[in-house]
Image (cartoon, rainbow, N blue to C red):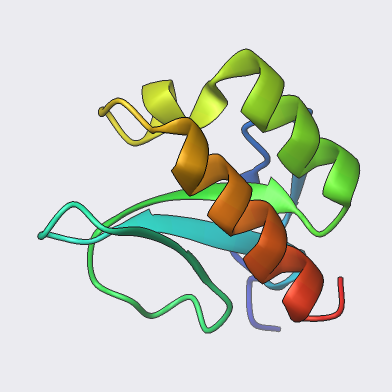
Length: 88
């Protein structure tokens, strides 16, 4: 039986199988985006597919800590829009 990799949501701290989470990635150029494939190059952090976790992450500035950079408010708003556009 193949072992399923687990990751922890940076907002609610729940450990889940990797395929049940959404990866947020900071690429080498510093661009931050949602990675629905889980294969983009760069530093990643994981969030539950629940919008509440993304909103909690926005309030607590969780991505700043997880991605080791300062994330602008516009980036958080872009992530929320991108999240909604992908039907979650």
